[in-house]
Image 1 (cartoon, one colour):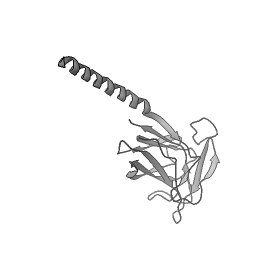
Image 2 (cartoon, helix red, strand yellow):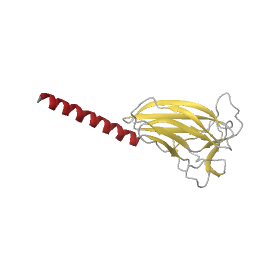
Image 3 (cartoon, one colour):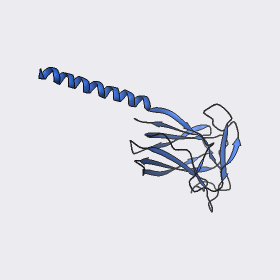
Image 4 (tube, one colour):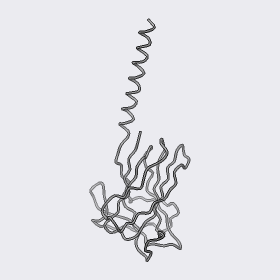
Length: 176
């Protein structure tokens, strides 16, 4: 009798674990996109201007728009995209064809409401136009959400002469 109960418990446990695994995989994936049409201030005062241009990205297939601000080191503005879904893992930004300047992106990951990741990466928006730039991945899983910020400040070792810094679509994947 103990053998039957033992086998039943093992079978039920394995079936439950497999079901949970498939349920998590169903929620994982992507890619997910967040566009620049709604930006939130992260220390920004001057809202980025909108431009309609075929060189911008639009994952809905509608009007292709980007937002931009001219470089400003003395009084830079920082804006962020909407928060990502939970368990954000990998992130990319689109380099529009109209890109001119180098941009410094700041990535943040939150776990149980506490800031865990906080790093920056420079992307030259004037090179590899019309492609996705891989920014990296979250070091902390599970996480509640991720946040991508961009400022129009000049990036050291790149030209800074009043060029436009662009906010365009971002793409990310999640992990269960």
